[in-house]
Image: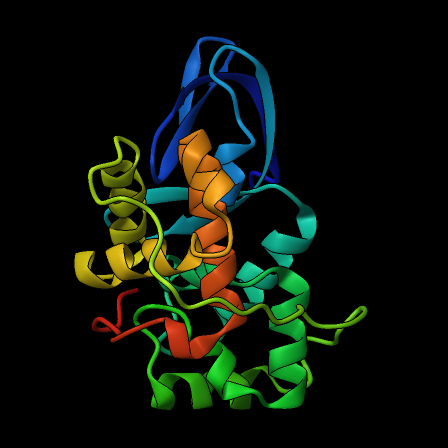
Length: 218
């Protein structure tokens, strides 16, 4: 098993990165938060989980061993594949996932694109006792007014990153606008990674803002 990768970051994309290991490029899928911590040309380290299927081998990378642990536990739920497990980690931090699973908060999981009430209920049921909170859950924030301009140069990149995680373009656009309502300074900076983190954090804090869900993907 490949537990982690450490090497020069050769490329950082919207959904994956390539780590140069002594001349061999290893492609790793990761959440936008993890990818935003990597810089091309600099050394990077990712904890990894290798998914083996008949037709391919796929590496998933994480910024911490805690994220990888939660990812692996999520995969134990029937009907939850690596892409959906990664989407859960894109919306919620590991501790928030533990709190939701431990408290039976199915609504927390419906904030993730591709997860409806039935799948959320199954996640809570099958994770009961498997994930124990280390501390407290995530805090709640407010804010509803639309903000960012649709003409912003960064917006297509942020939308592309969100659609790769499972949101529809319509829901991604609405979520970006609403998430930046209370953070106009983030939009003004135009930093794609920071705007994406702000939007995903906002979605994880209020399920009512997540919009219509797309079909489940694994």
